[in-house]
Length: 203
Ligand code: SIN
Ligand code: MN
Image 1 (cartoon, rainbow, N blue to C red):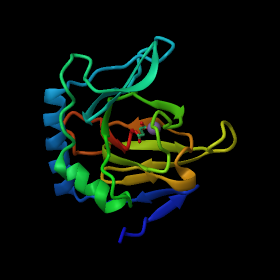
Image 2: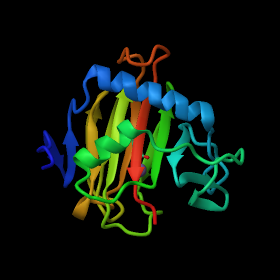
Image 3: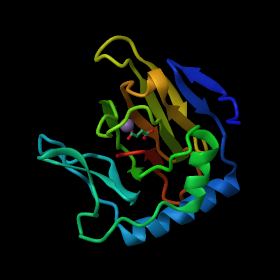
Image 4: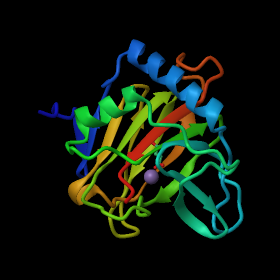
């Protein structure tokens, strides 16, 4: 059985403090190995502007963006295959995502001071019946949740290190984004900053 979320906002489930400090530290160590094999890069939007968030991926597919648009790629821009999704991350997916199917992609977003992510939908995947699971590590991030349709009112909450968010069912295609981070609010990453992992079934 999936544990009950501590909060549900517009159908988006939030498990606050789902991961204790030791689990968070172990995840960061796993992610350092991922970033060593597939270094962080700053993708360009379709309009040719560099994103403020740096990213990389693990899994069969990595999320990628440039002037040709948003898509999944089987390789890192350097040509190497994406490293496998760490077991610890897969265990978390199976604990909370409520599906037997394993994710194909673990996107790793890194928010340094001043980085943000505009309101968007996750819709580059083939089958929206699978949920999106997202894990916050490090500094607090102000997460904004809108609607499935563009526009309308939004609600925001601060995501803290160890919080896990699920966008599934009627909330699978809600608009969401990160307005800002509170740099230095967590001691998890010695240099500060926020990591977000986004797990998705792609094909
Ligand atoms: C994303 O939507 O790709 C990232 C969300 C987050 O950083 O919490
Ligand atoms: Mn997203």
